[in-house]
Length: 156
Image (cartoon, rainbow, N blue to C red; front, side, top):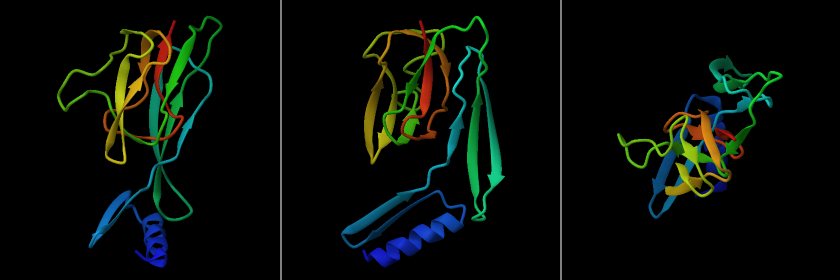
């Protein structure tokens, strides 16, 4: 595919509400995904409030800004954020309709699979890198996630 056509396609996607497009021309194919920007406060508390806001951007397209507000108190538990190691789509269970890999309150050990992230049509096991108890799930099933985005909170 011609690079000029690709650049025009990206500009078109940025000007519209299209979030994902796949094109195949002969033996060549292209898949473009536009991810939302996410903002996370840095203080954590076991009680989590998740709020989605739609805002109109200067480019005349909607961006979803997810704010996860977590307040700290003088008696906070030590919550460790398990972060996404890649960009992709998160899956909380191995198959549709199956039980999730982990639930809030469940004990996990280092190496336990907590979810899957699909990136470029490959499903990647995401494992706990710290032992503890799942105190919060910060994502929903089949939600796009960014690199470094917190997925779960693990308490000691």
